Length: 216
Ligand code: E4P
Image 1: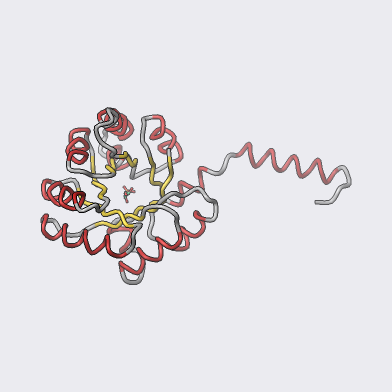
Image 2 (image 1 turned 90 degrees about the vertical axis):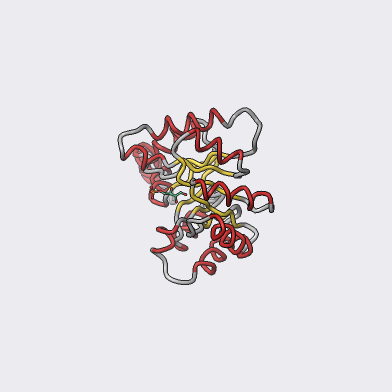
C-alpha cells in the first residue's frame, strides 16, 4: 500500500518528501484554508516537491461548476487529480471530467454502494474517510474492506485511498483491509517511523561502542 501525505503545508511536505516515502499529496478546502497564498500557486508548489499526484478539490456543488473548476484545476499542473464530492452532482461532473482524461477522485465516500457508483462514473480514486466514520460509531476500516472488496473484480482501475487516517494503527489496518493507498497527516507519518525499542536499541549500540573506547 502506497502512502500519500494529507496536508497543504509546504514545510511538512518538504520534511516528509525528504524521507522518500511519499507518493502523492492530498489537500481539501479545510487544509488549504490553513495556508496563506493563492490556491493554484500552493498546488503548483506542492507538485514541484513530490513525485506523484496532487489532489485539489472543487468547491461548487452543481455539476456545471464542478466541471468548470475541475478543468481549471487540471490545467494548473499535470500532476493534479481533481477531488469531487460523492454526490449525484459530483458523479455527473466526475463522468464528464473522466471522459476528458482528467483524473478524478471521489471524496467523502462512506459506503461500498457509493464507491461502485464512483468507479462506474470513471473515478480514478475513491476516498473513504476512516476517522470520520469511527467518530459517529461506525467501523471505518470495515468500510474500507467492503469498498476494496467490491472494486477488486478488475472491471475498473479505481484505487481505494484510505483517508481521514488518525493513527499509525489506522494505516496498518487500512493496508490489511485492502486499501491501495493511505493518505496520512504529517503527525501520523512521523509517528509511524518511531518505536521505543528502536530508540532503546540504538542507545545501547552507542553506549557499548563508546564504552569500548572507540570514537563515533
Ligand atoms: C482526504 O483526502 C481528506 O483530506 C482527509 O483525509 C480528511 O481527514 P480528516 O477527517 O482528518 O479531516
